[in-house]
Amino acid sequence: MIDLASDVKTRPTAAMREAMANAEVGDEQAFEDPTVNALCERSARLLGKEAALFAPSGAMCNQLAIATWCRPGDEVICEHTAHIAVYEAGGPAANAGVMMHAIHGERGQFTAAQLRASFRAKWRHCPQPTLACVEQTANLGGGSVWPLAQLNEVAALAHEHGLRTHMDGARLLNACAATGISARDYAAGYDSVWIDFSKGLGAPIGACLAGSREFIERAWVIKQRLGGAMRQAGIVAAGALYALDHHVERLVEDHARASRLAAGLAALPGVLLDAASVQTNIVFFELDVAGLGFDAHEFSRRLAVLGVRIGAFDDRTLRAVTHLDVSAADIERCLEAAAAVLATRAG
Image 1 (cartoon, rainbow, N blue to C red):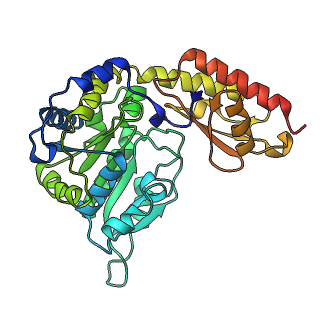
Image 2 (spheres, one colour; image 1 turned 180 degrees about the vertical axis):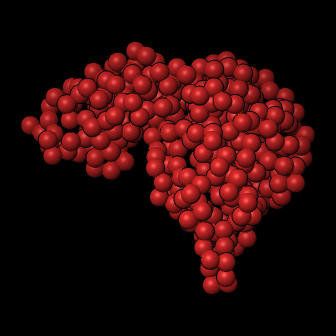
Image 3 (cartoon, helix red, strand yellow; image 1 turned 60 degrees about the vertical axis):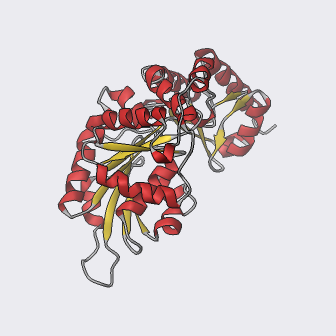
């Protein structure tokens, strides 16, 4: 099966498994695991922050940041398709008691002007914003890359109005690979930021949340409360360190394959896609359902029979995500399978 459903479908390479098997370990929550400590120090340097902590998932990093920066009843501002608003099972409300204020931006991004327009009157009847969040790259925006100037303008305005800023960096390194801009520069205006190791970098688990030392100390309390403290976590941290050493520069290969996939799909009858909109490793496209006689879910099922997995988001929309387990040859096989399915149409 060629699995394009997500870049979380990657499997650790043989060399990564060897690094994990040979990792030095200790009690992570007591800061006695040398491999976890090394990963946190390296991640903090990479992101230009004072300190970092290791968590099982990026979603937990988002939840830790929100619960650390906010009090119950506060408002968190984000784009309406942001992962924290759509795909974290209501975590901000359940874990931190906050309200989400969603801005309807473009391709998962919003501007400083839109942020300014979202601010409510400062009186006791209105919830007050305390945190502005961005997602780099924007998943449901098709892996779109926030421009650095726009990120800085949003952060500056938020700070001017007394808000903290948080960056969901699930695919931050994809943005770096696409633009040549460093993670440190992208994160400079943000009080907290995390990077994921289990997506494009191919590690089996984990993410690092970074910020000031005071922020990380406070976030550790929330991490403990949520059951995120771990024991000999160096085994999985070693996979993340291996990924930083060996899988960052190759992200451009995923982007090239996504571009090829987009161009090939756009040329097929019944597919609605602007191939030029693909910036990183995520390809969203729609189907001409009326013309084809079947919807995106059926298209996905028929592709799976031919050995290709692509996720259907609704009746018209599908998403394909390239990663290190998908080769250039796999992309050509995907396009051949897609063409075969589309050729069948309804009859």
